[in-house]
Length: 175
Image: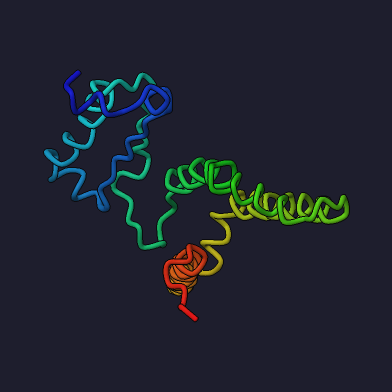
């Protein structure tokens, strides 16, 4: 291992590394062998960096992302990726903040727990039905939904920055 590789902490190296090999058309799979070889070489790179558990997802080779072709591997990948979102540090700190703001009353705490469980259940249903929902709404609606949620996420991020700046007291007016 080089000094650059040592930047990865042991806790990261214990996780699974995933290499998603992707080429959009059968012609690319046949003609772009160098690209494909380099993508598969990422498995060796991950192992050299210290990852012992490396998974290769290449079921979508030669399948377009246009929405007209079934891409089960990308759906399975997105379902596996959602777990850290639901149980990661952001979700946990959010739950702690919500519980801290209940005022210690049991009814408010139950309401927070019920809301969290509802969100988790709704997310599970969406992830399990992702393929069917994608097929049902079509490509154009997918693009519209992605853009709308991208704008919404950006607005939330900007508001969070403003809240942090105003809460820090940096811009206090002198009286």
